[in-house]
Image (cartoon, rainbow, N blue to C red; front, side):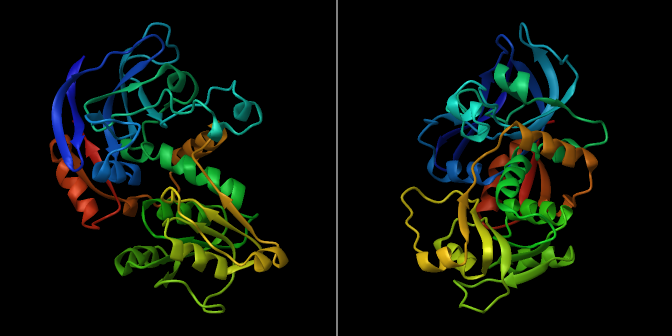
Length: 335
């Protein structure tokens, strides 16, 4: 099917081009009703991506309606509203067999990619394992949060202690927002720290405790927290998180740091306080199912996260807004 899709032809250069997309065996072709911006898009927009040579389609947080069904694809028909994450595990490799589906060795061999377009292909593996019906009362824009929310739930399941506990979110961007509202929903007392006073006002308006962070805190400069979700990727935030981590607590490195980034810490303090530093990457099927259930409940305050809605033609303007530090997530509606 011929349709319009954005191609990234060079850093900060977008072209709205005519492309051809057709479903193969087991695939679904979905008409995009809502696509969301995310940090991965911004990084790719600025410098490209080693795994996606120019020109490349991009965008992966989306929801829509089935337009065409590939041979052998079951469970969906044209017109069905669906919500979908970016990937699905193979279920056969060693990490999958050990219950670590987020570390599947072929996780991104078949992925949902190219959501900033009129249509997007859902590969057979994702169509079979991770594509879900979208309830009528769930807006397409909120349904498109399935992918990032699954990442948040994967991290909190492994790093957050049983509620109620004291949880600190370092970095009040879109992912920090999802961490904050989800952790509070699950009974944690949540504090958000960020350098951006405008973002902190959003959290204050929702009743969160906030800290205007500036560099690494000194010992005793803030209360101790049972879990710290580091959502900025900044080395200074790592040091701050350790300084305010309570004995027995966990610091979760949620944000993707630059390759080769070295971090230092006091190993004796980590030992004697029985603390833990943990990474968290992507998600497995359980986290996706939990994220869908939470979105279907419609109990999270997601409105402030979705800054504005724009047509497909204005997507380059949206990317420049993001680079200027404006807003949180933007919704692209191809129409």
